[in-house]
Length: 455
Image (cartoon, rainbow, N blue to C red; front, side, top):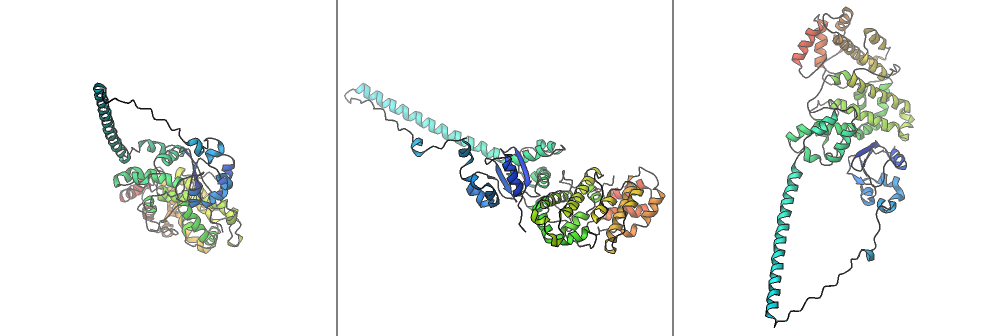
């Protein structure tokens, strides 16, 4: 299978196009959405102007193959925006030296005036030289001061709150992302700028050139994905697609990066806002975002879609893409806008995670393979927990309380698939199943786990 690269085009240092594969790059180039004067970057590589053939060949040979003969001349020459000047035309006309006036040594007065004039010229030249040196030193000092100065992140932070991230991504890509070490060189600077770098990373490719994945990831459980870049998700799919398809079809419960992210409970993610994160709210939401970008890219790859021996098909990519979108919608809004396909495990999980009533929750359960029972039971118990938390106050609905009491044994302090910490959820189910009121149970959990928000 051909390893597809992922590219981003920067136009006039003001806007970005992409991420996109080579085929989409060629289509957009033909539609003149960008030109050879613009820059391209891919798979964490440097920004390269498209009409710089030597640099482009070194870093992005796939783009060179797409451009072909377009690189024979520079963009400026090909479009007439600059005139080609020959060596003969570029030679400067030599000025003939002006004849100097001869001084007669016998003319003592004229000779003395000539000497004085030469001394005055020499003095003026010395003053001018000193002035130039002092000015250069002052300018250099100013430039050093400006280079080390870290601007406030307030302007960028205000753009983060907008529903459309385009303006934030464009401004960050132009002024900040090319100089990551400047903004992240000390713990103080990291506290201010790291949330912005994380938003830029997970809204694009999940990686930033010059910023280690470890820094973007932050302090996470050992069971969390080590690398959530788009390229890493694509590579993991190629390695485990056949196992992942068995999981989707409900035939087995293999544990790999894709089955873990697809089984991740969005309500678990929603409850855990993390320090140092804004959008996404934590690392796990960021991983879902980049996984969604990766699967959309893989779905447009004819080589991947045609790999029938592993069961890979456009329908599979559609199922996975829909599941990831539903997880992100539940994290953001607490509800899902699309219909659930209960013919596969992904649809059943989304149904159980978003049911708003006990009747809806019961309709989500389907007859499943014995191997799937632990996951379905856990999702059902967590669904009951969510319905209980949705009650405003007072005693728990008797039917929900009875079902919760029978569900205590179906969840544990670790998630079935990803092995993430479920202790707060487990404690809350335990409190509710022993007859405690909803508000009283929530108060106990809030005191014990101050960073977890169930409401």
